[in-house]
Structures are given as C-alpha cells and as structure tokens.
Image (cartoon, rainbow, N blue to C red; front, side):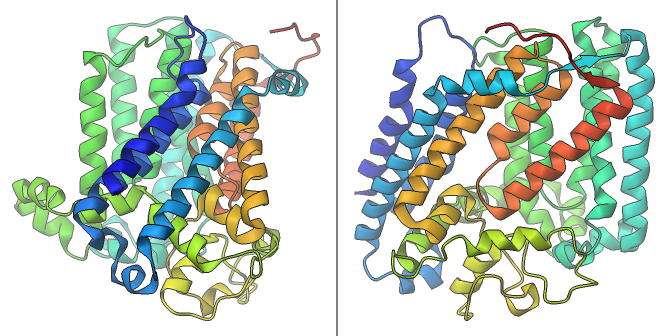
Length: 445
C-alpha cells in the first residue's frame, strides 16, 4: 500500500510542472523548488515505512488506532495542501504585489565590496568566538554537544551578528558578477568552507545546508545560469548528502573523540541508521500526529500564534515564557504531557517536533485554515520571486527569496526566524551596501 502511496505522491508533486511554459528553464523558481522539497521530505519516508514501520517510533505505533486510514487521510490533506500552494504560486496578482515592495539603489562601488567582505566577515567571526566564550569555550562545547540546546539557551541575541560571517562569504561570491579570477574563487571557497565548519560546531545542519543553497543560488542568478543538474554539481551535492547523514551521529556524547580515532566508522554507522536520518528532515510523522490528535472540536483557534508576542522578552526576565518553537507542543503530546496553548516552556518537554505550515495551520484552524494558509504560502513565494526578478537579482532580494522559499513556513518558529533574518539582512545591507529606497517608478515585468 505504502509503495503505491509513495508513487501517488510523486505524481501529485510532479504534475504541476507540466503547466510550466516551455522555455522557462529556471530550475530555482518557486514551483520547482516546492516540488523538490515535497518529494525529498515525503516520498522516501513512505518507501522506508513500507519495509520498516519502526520509523514512526514506538510511541506513535501504539498511539495510532488505524495507521492505514491515518495515512490515507494524510495523503488527501497533503495533496490538497500542495495544490493550494501551487495555486498561490500561479496567482498573477503576486506580480502586482512585488511591484509595491520598495526597491533599493546600491550606493557602493564594486571596488568597495572587498572591504565590506573583510569587515562583515570579521564581525561575524568575532561574534562567533564571543558566543563560544560565553558557553565555556569550544573544547567544552564540543565535549557536551549533546546538550547544545541548554548550553545556548538565553544567548539568542548574542548569535545574531554571526550571520554577518555568512553574508560576508556570500557577498564575495556575489561580486563574480563584476569580475572573477582564480584568486577570488579560492578565497570564496576558503570562506565558505570555514563558515560551514564553524556553524557545524553547533551540532546543527540546516545553517550549513542553507549556506550551500545560497551559494548555488547566487552563482546561478548573478554569474552563470545552471540549466540542468550537471557533473559540476555532483561533488557539492555528494558532500551535502554525506554531511547531512553524518552530522546527527556527532551530537552524541563522546562521538567526536570516537570518530576522530575511527573515521571509517562514521560512514558505516551513518548508513546503518536510515530511520534516524529520514526522521531528521522529514516531518511526516509530525503531520500524522496532528491529524490524529486534532479535529474541528478541539482545535486551538490560533492561540499558539500568541506565543510570538513574548519572543522579544528574554526568558531570564519571564520564567513563564511560552516556547517560541511550537513544535515543543507536539513533542510534549507524544511524551504524555498535559498540553495547552501558551503553556510555559519549562512545563513542557524540552525538545521539538516542528509542525511547519501543515501542522501549525491544522491544529489551529483545521482543514479550512490549512488550505487558505497554504495558498497564502505559495503566493508569498511567488511574490518574493517576482521581487527578485524586478530587483535584477541584487544581493538583498536574492538572499531574501532564497531564505524564504526553503525555510519560511506559517509556524511560530519559522515566522520568528524569517523576521529575524530579514532584520539582520536589512541591517547588513543598509550599513555595508548602503542601500537606499529607490525613487524611480517601477517598470512592468
């Protein structure tokens, strides 16, 4: 059954691509990225579930009364949600909305980009090591990486300027549009590699994967269009895949010392735990839990979104602060906690199952809210894509589109992350790129 569902999902996710006009070869337009992300996060899960139902976890296997019926409900709701995202992407009003977003003029000469890269990267690097010193040093952090969430708790504001390190590395890549040479390529490679290594020290993978995606996106839009996936992309794709499946193993206590002495064991152990790997980037079981747990008579009517009002308040000043990550509610439900909206974080399970748009919308507004929200999500993706095109693929609009199209969801955590990213990106662009609001009348696209 689940092999059939996997193939059916594949047809659902690929079918809108048939509506793309011939000659539209942009492989990074929102329709294609949306299809790719859905395929990668849904189809493999069902394929594995066909042969290994333990991928759900013992807690959910015993919790769900009829797994087959639940998966069929999920198939229907996920397919409808996907097509509503596609509908939002195809809404041509997004072009008019994109025209209303202020455009910017860059008041910086190409020769000043190098200085900007040096200053911004240095600020980010200094912020990184300052944060490490607050934690107790890099050695202490790596020895206790399994407790990284508690070690970094309350240091969120200190980590914001670390983003400048990423911006600096990507800005140098952006200057390929002016001039490119062997030395510049080498420096870009060094800066990107250093940033990936340092960000990986925190034990997560998303920031590093996003950095690679941003790098490919900027290369594509500002230097040379990538027509199809060719041999030049095989190496970075392979590295990202290997990085993605090995990083969770390094979060375990003592893992770094063990694998440093036994590097060959890292690869073999990674491929021996496909269940853990797929659950680390696919949220299918989260969605199944939401569908099983919530119905029209017990939805939360948007109350979890009120948690975002407390985001600016440090937890040290407000102990009853609810979680910024609404995935904490889902993980607490699985753990058997008495869960209600706006509950203090300290009274919930100290981990998260991200609900993303599907879960957050369903548990708050049920099916009508789910479909309306998904349509809005697609509309936002298309609007930001058109804004990037209108802005002639400048650094600000390309970074904004790249972040939103692969990370933005209508859940608390993703909304807060998006607001934070936009504020830091705007601050960076105003200070270092000296962008100013354009007074020119926008031309039609």
